[in-house]
Length: 602
Image (cartoon, rainbow, N blue to C red; front, top):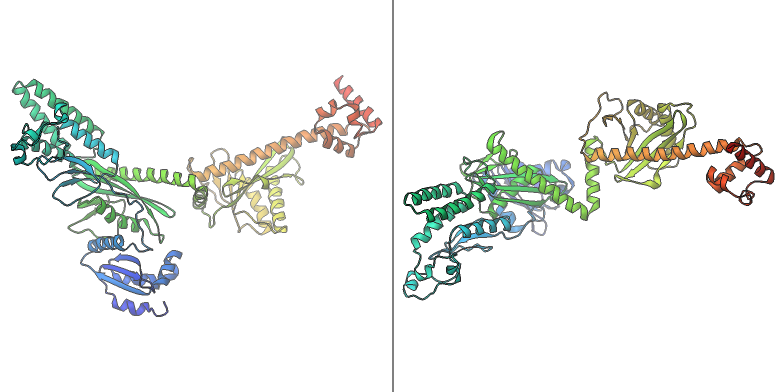
C-alpha cells in the first residue's frame, strides 16, 4: 500500500459503467465489483474509508492495484461481474454456498427419442428441461409422463434401416404395455412424435394446451363410437388434471418470469427463486449466501440473480424483485417491483418461501451452535428496546408483601438471556413502614447499586422493574441519587397488558406477544416474582415462629436462634425429645417450653 496512490489511480478510471477489480501486493485478485460510474464507485472506498465497516476497511488496506473493464450498459456490467466472480472466486466476494449439480430431464436427439433424467448437460442437440431444484419433483413429472405415454426405455439404435433389417425383437416392456414396440416397426415415428409434442408442452408448463388437445381427441373418439379409446384418453386427462391441480398455478397471463426474494440474518442471507412458465411454478429453489463485507440485501440480491439464472439456464426477460436494484432495465431484461395484483402475489409466495427456509436453517444452525441463538436474541432485544449495547447482563426487581407484613424485595439476574441463579439476591426492607411499594422499590434499588459501586462490581446493561410508572419512577430516583441513571437502560413492565414503560415517556411500548424480547422480559418478571414470593413465605413462616418462641417465658432471643438453627421448624421443636432439647435448653427452659405447648394444645 505504500507505493499505491489511489488518487493517481482514480484519474485513470472513467465515469463509465463497468467492472472493477482489486489486487493485493502479491497481485492476487481479491475483489470484483460493478458500477454505473466506475470512478465514483471506486473513489468511495478511499474517500469515505472511516465510514466503512471493519471488513471493508481491511479490504481497502490490501488494495495495491486496480483494473477495470468498460461495458456498454449496466446489465452488461452486472453479467460480467457475475462471470468473473464465478471464474476467479475472490476471497472478499460473496459466493453462493450451494454447489450441487441439479438434475435435468432430457429428450435425446435420436430416432424414437428416449426420455430420462441426468445431471450431465451435453450439447449434442438433445432437448434439456430444468434443472430441477428438487429431485423428488423431477421424478413426479417423469413418472407422470411415463404413465401417460408409452415410451421406449432401451438404448437400441432405432434408425429406420436397422428396424427394416429386423435386427431387434420386442422386450417385456412391450408385453406389459409400457412400450408400443417401435424396434419391430409396431409404432411409427409420426405416432411416437405426437406423444413427444404433448410431453414437450407439459415440460414447458403448457399443461392446459395438452388437456385441451385431449378433450378434443376424446370427443372425436366418441363421435367415431370408439368408446374404448375415449375411455383411455379420459383416463389420461384425469391423471393430467390431477397433476395440474397439485401444481402451483399462478395465472395463465403470466407466461415466463423469474421471481426473486431475499431474507438476511447477521452473516447469512437466503435467496429464493421461482420460475413461472404459463402460469405455473415449474422450478423453485432457495440458496444460502455468506456475507463477506456486510453487504446490503440489495447488493446481495444483485449478485445472486445472475448466478442463479445461470445455474438454471433461465432466459426470462422479466425479473420480479422485492425492491429496486441499482441496475437499470434494458431491452433484454426488465426488473419489476410489483405493488398489487398477480405479480405481487407471486412475490409474496417467494417471500413466504424464503422466510420459512431462513427460519428452519437458523433453527438448525442454532441447535448446533447455541451461542448463535443467544447473540441473535440479544441483538433483537437491543433493537426492540432501543439500546446502544447488547443487554448481556439484565437485573429485574420485584416487591412482595402481604397486607404490609414482612415486605421484601427480590432481584434476579440474567446473563446472556439465561438465569444466573447464583447471583440472585433478596432484601429485607429496613426503612419502609407499611405497604408502600414505591418506597420499597426505591430502597431496594439504592441498596443494590450502592453496594455494586462500593465493591467495584459491574452494572447491568438493562434493569427491568416489575411495575408501572410509579415503581419505575421510584427506581429512577435512586439511580439518579447514585449518579448512574445514564449508564444503563431502565424499563418497567406493567402486568395488565404487558406494557413496557421508559422513564419520562408518557406512552408505553407494546411488543408483539410472540416476540423473543417480550418472552425474555416476561421470564425475568416471572422468575423475580417466584423468587420473591418463596423468600417472603420463608420469612413470614420464620418470623411467625420466632415471635411464638419469644413469647415463652424464660427463653431469650439467643436460645430462640439456637432452636431455629437446630430444629428448623416449630413442628420439629414440638416433636423433639427432652434429650434432644437439652442440647439447646437448660432444664428450666425445657419445662417452660413444654408447659407453653401443653397450654396451647389445651
